[in-house]
Image (cartoon, rainbow, N blue to C red):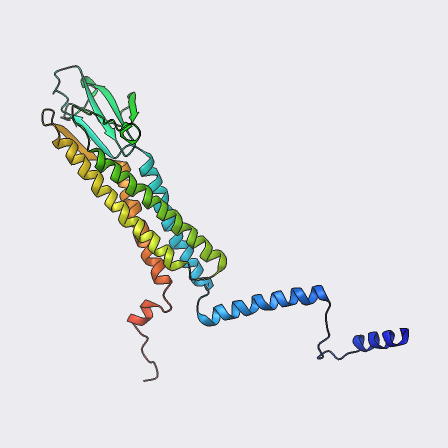
Length: 275
C-alpha cells in the first residue's frame, strides 16, 4: 500500500510540464470561479456590452456634469429666492417700505428704510441688503391655509404642482446617478440607457416646474391690482433652470455613449486612402 502511494506521488512530481495535473478541492473550486468570471468577461467583450477605458472616462466626465446639475437643483429647490416682490418705495408714503421673496416652501419679508435705498431706484429693496428677514413656511401643505402677500394670495394649486414636479425631478436625478454608478462598477453599458432616460425626464420636469411656478407668480400679481408690484425671478430659479439644462445634456450624452456604434464615424465615414 505504501509503495503504491510513493510511486503515485513520484509520478505526479515527475510529470512533464505540459501535462495537466489534478488539483485539490479548494483549488479546483477557486479555479472554476475564476474561469467562470473570465468567461463572463469574454462574453461581454464579444457582445459589445462592456465599457472600455476611454468610454469609462467619457462616462465619468458626463456624470460630473449630471452631478453638478443635481447639486444646483438641490440648492434651488431648498432655497426661497425664486421670485422677488417689491412695491414702489413711495407707495405707502412712509419712512419704511416692505419687500418680499418666496420659493416653493416658504416666503420671507424685509423692511427697509427709504433713506437707505438708492435714489435712482423706484422699487423697495434690494433684498441683498443686510436687513432682518421674517420668514414663514407655507401652511397650505399642512393646514390648507393660504398666505397673503401685499393683499395678494398666491395660487395654491399651482405652487403645490410646482413643488411636486421639483421633487419628482430630484428623484429621477438620483435614480439616474445610481444607474451610472452601477454601470461604472459593473463595467457594463446596460445601465446607461435607463440613466439617460431618468436624466432627460428630470430635466423636462424641471423646466415644467419653472413654467408652473411662473404661472403661479402671474396669478398672484393678478389677484389684486390695488398694490402694484415689481417682480423678478431670482437666483434660486436660475439654479433650477441651469440644473435642468445640464441634466438634459448629460442624459443625451449618456444615450449617445450607450449606442453600439459611434455616431461621429457613422455620419462622417473615413475616406479610403488607397485610391
